[in-house]
Length: 141
Image (cartoon, rainbow, N blue to C red; front, side, top):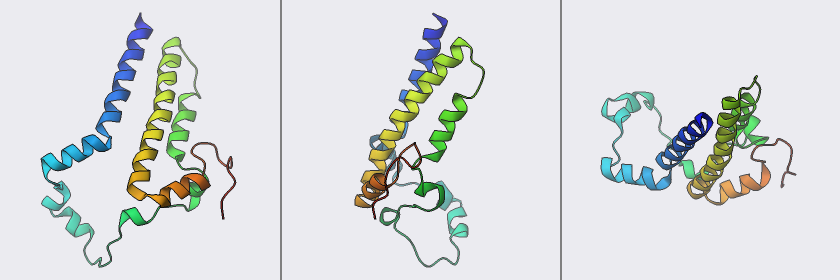
């Protein structure tokens, strides 16, 4: 019963997290907050951008250098490895299993969001660079 409770709590957290990062929720918050940017309100964004003339459109480029040219989600892979590199109790196994499944599902949801944001550029990146397992795809030239 204890393990079922732990599993349900983590599954609930994962579901809530997925909802809060979804495009639907972020669009709703943008509409409700009318594109409110607290960094601009306090002048921090202006200070950070002082002297910068060129403004890049994030939907035009995808970073593919360094580690991101070998694997698309290195931090998520590292998290999965960290989860499974320890001594386990039964509750650790339950939590790690749920979190691993969630990381995989959330990564797929994030991939859809990135494909919408970056378009064909990201789709090409998906074809060239593997999601989790380095060197598991042949690079398209």
